[in-house]
Image 1: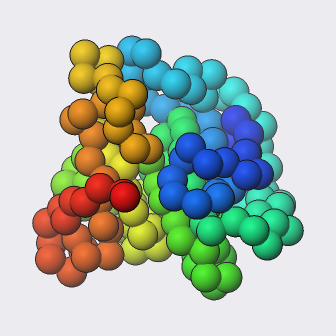
Image 2 (image 1 turned 90 degrees about the vertical axis):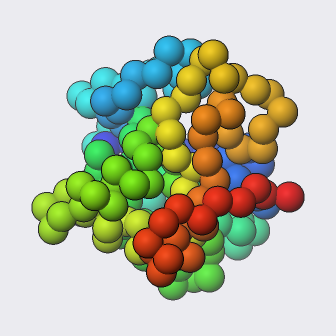
Image 3 (image 1 turned 180 degrees about the vertical axis):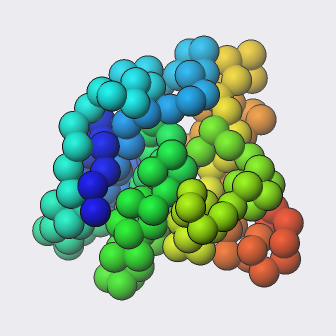
Length: 168
């Protein structure tokens, strides 16, 4: 399956707990002021690649604890991101996704065409909410602003409400 990405990081320690392989998806409708990755906003930027190539790349690193889907906006390419996440799960890797959308919005708007639910069902942890420069904090773990939440996605899907927590 094709996916447009800005790039990858083979061994990140800032995109979630442990050592992570991070995929920076290309294209973002939010365009948050002060975004850490403004080069990922343009939907025509970056490079188109095949999910298989990314999977091969992250499976080459036996030291990673998981993969992180960042952006850009991963939910704008939810089906391709779900394919990456499913393969990661097969290899006992956890999956984190960042999104500018709220968890509740993604659930409400999920349908067979956009793949939102398909991706949510494969993600362990979701960092949701737009980056808000007025609530920016360097003290938060794996988040940029206080309005963003860390959500246990699988528990949230069972409870049908956002179950939040903080990484230790």
